[in-house]
Length: 94
Image (tube, rainbow, N blue to C red; front, side, top):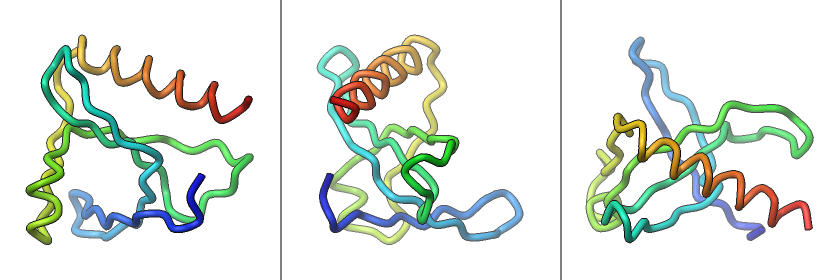
């Protein structure tokens, strides 16, 4: 894993800012979209954390401070993202 991680600030429904690190990004040819998987910044390696995943537009994210993150609402997309996350985590264990 890179020493230099990308940090993203998300604002929750209460207006509180939370920092997240980018675990990985990938593009799905099946859905024609890019995805990003995040985890809470500062979490330890052995710490169990909730991961967040979004559809993202790398062009929009780079060009704006608002970011280009869109919630995933389709069950088929969620299944695909979970499968990719599991593959990524399995590869990290090797």
